[in-house]
View 1 (cartoon, rainbow, N blue to C red):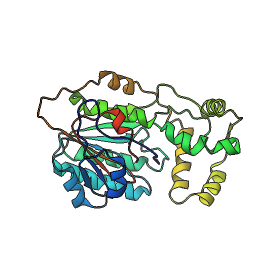
View 2: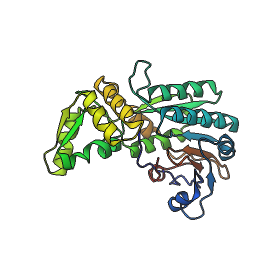
View 3: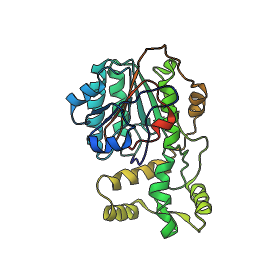
View 4: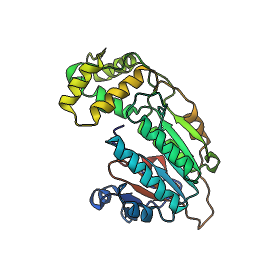
Length: 300
């Protein structure tokens, strides 16, 4: 899935963040003064190994774009992470990894979960629902002008979750050792139809906006005329997956893990490292406990 913003940084648990990006210039603009910085790229296995060195926990967030590249990035990052010998890898997956799914990225995340299981490193998997930020940026905001959200998604329900809430879940998981070896579905607390989502946005926007179902062929014709590969295929298969109800699952996991989170109370002098590998600008590295306010500031 495409991403627009995410965040990472120090928080109320006394973290001293050190972040890892592909290039230093944009990184420096986003980092507090004095923050240690490591530079690496998902395509550079040696740089990944250097960046992950000394990590206690590694939080891996996918890159984006061509599915073959994303799969390769997962493989490189998981292999490098395993060599670093962390106590755990926390991986942000998606709720739709079923072998029967039509979604373009389902095999990619399924492969990553398989690699994690085979890595020999304990892992925790967060399977995220469809981002509300994605719905807003790609489907709702453009409809302010056109007055219509036109998708081949049928009436399938979705349980949207914001990136900010996913950040909160990451922090909660990273602070709870008892979550090792677990998988969680991080979704919104309620499944909504696209009719309901568009109607709510229409009220907020103060203008009439409707949701209309189109054929996949018509949608592909429009996306191929306006978007680059692989987005026509990725978005159309996402809609197909939504129409089949694959993003409509509602889980209480987010509420439960967030409620259980508390400052970890590490002993004085102990230092723990968290690594956040983010999309487009791989990636970020953290020292000692993160806070949701920090995680929400980065882009992926």
